[in-house]
Image (cartoon, rainbow, N blue to C red; front, side):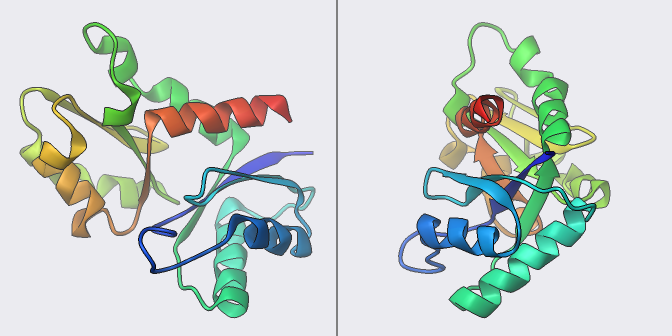
Length: 183
């Protein structure tokens, strides 16, 4: 059965937008998804679906169900396991960086569509010489060698410029990939 990843934006940070992972798993199961697993407490869900719904339709269904059952308005982005694999392989930063990169300093910005990714292009003007920025077909990537909180591009990506995307660090992306491989 095809695998998918749902990524929720901005949940469980502080006291706002609380979404318990057990309730989220139960909710997706009630929507007809199978083998639902969560990773961490930040809204990473791996699931299977036999249906033919597009990832956009799945995202909308999950987002609506969360709003209706948990009273939490949260953007949801869904990627197929095939798209997720391409997100990992298209990142040239991991291959071109000198030495080993710190996976906690590489942000991956996930968007539901390529138009939203293209809207991130103004970040290029904020990238410092020690940083790397790439917009791919499936995601955007920002490596902040001196730390994300020290980066103007990182602050913009996590702020208003990035409000239509959700980000995960590279370490989380690799953990999601491992979860996909174990199913």
